[in-house]
Length: 203
Image 1 (spheres, one colour):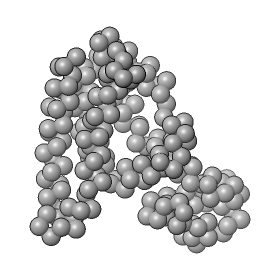
Image 2 (tube, one colour; image 1 turned 90 degrees about the horizontal axis):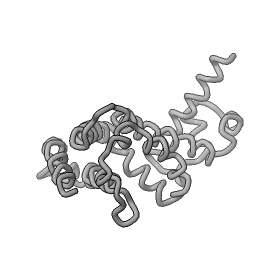
Image 3 (cartoon, helix red, strand yellow; image 1 turned 90 degrees about the vertical axis):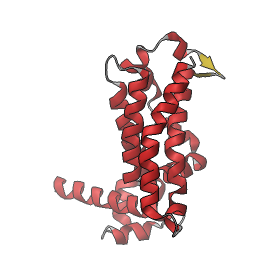
Image 4 (cartoon, helix red, strand yellow; image 1 turned 60 degrees about the vertical axis):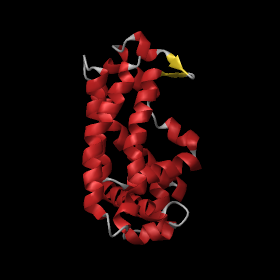
């Protein structure tokens, strides 16, 4: 019985994730999810209480998936800022190319419910990682109320994410297409660490 419950729960979540990523929260009905999961509305409400409850779980799962590589990188002892940025850029270039729908989805949710998304980010855990702990004090100094190393991470993520937002335009342009975007992504995977390392040297 327990095995069946887990299977049903997971099937609902997988179907809901696909629909929410494709259509968004407002355009996805609880009945759409029930039909896609070969389930019923009563079971969805039993497991998740409401469409909002199910959506929140999907958002939480995706944010956790996105943050997992960064947490793993920052747990490494003796990692220099340059090496950390190299690993972050390489890992997330591949990750977002494999999941190009995630950045837009999370950005939409940040605008829709910023407090909820913020609650999903383990800020204290990140601040206590070996990587942050061993940073020189100059990297921890506040710039505009934010530590300098946070600016570096934001800059790296910005340079990684913006191409994901324009990817559909590349693919829609017959002169460019998927290969052009793949080439762009490969070049930026090499260049972004160089740009970030230049910012590191400015400290």
